[in-house]
Image (cartoon, rainbow over all chains, first blue to last red; front, side, top):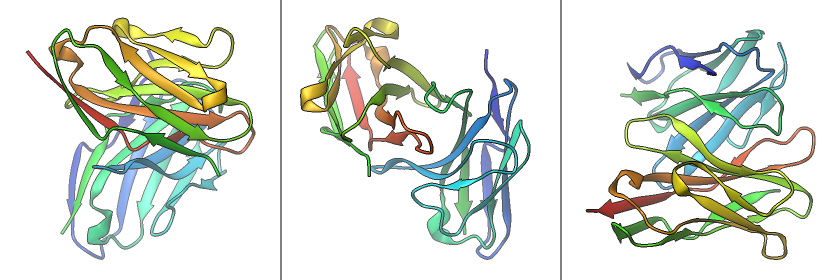
Length: 112
Length: 114
């Protein structure tokens, strides 16, 4: 079974803090993705990566950056957290770009 | 740019009723199509997918979906829903083109009463 793990299930941060969200997959997948999920808006793609050290902007990259130093790990960084970044963050991975994506459990981030 | 439209935001059904959730996408080329489900408190998981071949695809738990290319649609169906089908359902589309990512619809919440 593919396993995608995320470092925290719940996180509370203050405005202006730097926030790191970590995602690890154990299936040697090339492709990894970060989404945020908000009620009524579905899943929106923040960033994705097709290979180590590669990154591509998704639909809503503003206020976020990513890091992929190792194949299995994809980090999402909020340089200066703001209240409008309060959301559920989902990580996903897939072997081929067209293949099924496997999702982690999500991190519910609250920015106060 | 691709987009995905799910027709219903919230659907309420009684057990044993039939279900159809609409999904339309906008993209002129070849696509891969997915339905994902998120049960309360659980991960998003794949319900079914269509890549090619028979446009009627069957997934887990008795769900099926039909790809109608001329209508750019991929509607999800189930003949008889159960209380345990209460969940949020997402349609997603991936253009069969390098450099593109999976695009999700906004989701449909299904509530089934027993």
